[in-house]
Amino acid sequence: MATMADVARGAGVSIATVSHVLNGTRPVLPHTRQAVLDAVEELGYTPNTLARSLVTARTRSIGLAVSAISNPYFTEILQGVEAAALEQGYSLLITDPHDDPVHERKVVQLLHERRVDGMIVAPSPEPRELLAYLGRHRVPTVFLDRLVDPPGDGAPPLCDQVGAESTEPTARLVTHLAGLGHRRIGLVAGLPGLSTTTERITGYRHGLAAAGLPFDERILVHGHSEAAGAERATAALLDLGSRPTALVTANNAMTIGALRALRAHGLSVPEDIALCCFDDFAWADLFSPRLTAVAQPSRDIGARAVRMLLDRLANPDRPTRTERLPCTFVHRTSCGCPDGQEHPGDPAGSASAGPAAHPAVPKAHQERNPS
Image 1 (cartoon, rainbow, N blue to C red):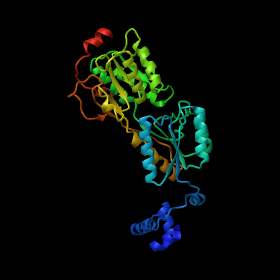
Image 2: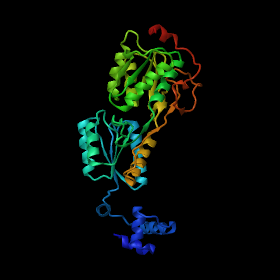
Image 3: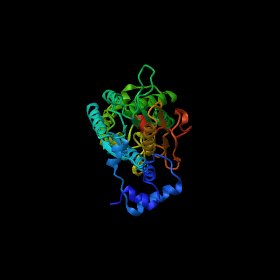
Image 4: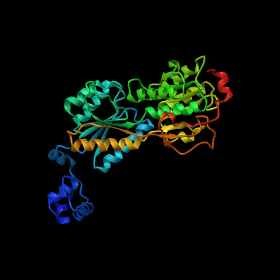
């Protein structure tokens, strides 16, 4: 098995120079760096990461704690994290906290005990124990997707954070439906306590206000961010005496649950009820009708979380920061717009960004669901 000394002889440099190239600990001239890399490739040299970690106190590993990894949205985030980590020479240890605060605390401690250099975490709705552990042990951490409010004393957030914009894109869905003539627009919201749930409810209410529509708490239900919960919540909405004529679902899993409930009630989209969803996913364009959605930059969120974490490792004392990435409005036909009125995805911006004129709500909606 080739050693670092073999690589140094092959490249005609010192062992220290080989170490600097492989570990990125000091700038090396481009032609020298290339000579080292060529020797590594020719000799089949594999660094001893265990020995290196004993010397550097770094394992070049990142812990990732994300619930619902099977959700396509989080799967794409994972792909973004993995690609960015591998590009920088880091490996991943992945755990699922199951959105349970107690389990979340356990898996984070487990990752810490495995000596990861830092963590990327999508926090649960009640992250008090998580925050206490990270603060006590000063673990470099980035929160992604679900953000945590800073302490009430005006202090900055405990950790760096990155996520998509949620409020205005949700408002955009509502104003788009209102522009089609809908006056009773329901929301299937996510798990209470998550920042994404709170922000999308806020966006929903902003959209109603921008359209001059009253807020009716009876048509805001919680699907708890999963398909089965959304199916039950949507069924309850449909059993109301004056059910909504349009529906916004606040993540992709809940969109599936809502569609199941609509089918069980014998309702068609968009003929009987219009539908828009937060989260685009790979097969949204294959549904009939095709789903009008807000697309989140999920892979970019994952990649950005890695870059923020590496920045933190390089400069542990810099102030924490929170970054928001823009979403895209993907206009298809489940909202009730006919083929031919679609347009390419554009930024899901302000609540006033909806179309100026569209056909009114079909008469069937008006007869079954008076305002």
